[in-house]
View 1 (tube, rainbow, N blue to C red):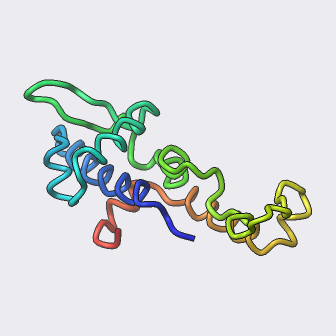
View 2: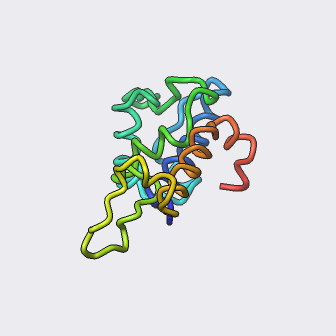
Length: 141
């Protein structure tokens, strides 16, 4: 299982925006791009999704930029994952199954399928991790 680049870059950008917001500043896309080594075009796609989900607010113009719409404690990594990743599950038991015979929609699957168990565990970790925690440990992301 890999966390997508879009999710990782989204988290990095949000940490940058959160730090600017805490100082009462707006974060400009060019500053985020240069600081986090993310192309402006890719960053625009990520920030567009986050803005549409009311995670951030944007202001246009020469004094424009982005700020958080919510407190960092209220933004979970799982929420960001769901917004930025195209996959519904963190770990899909069918991702390597060419025939897709297995279907982890049965209640029994969550107790018998190792991939389903891992998905449940990873989802709980992502649900229990907030942006505030990531800001405190930003050197780890």
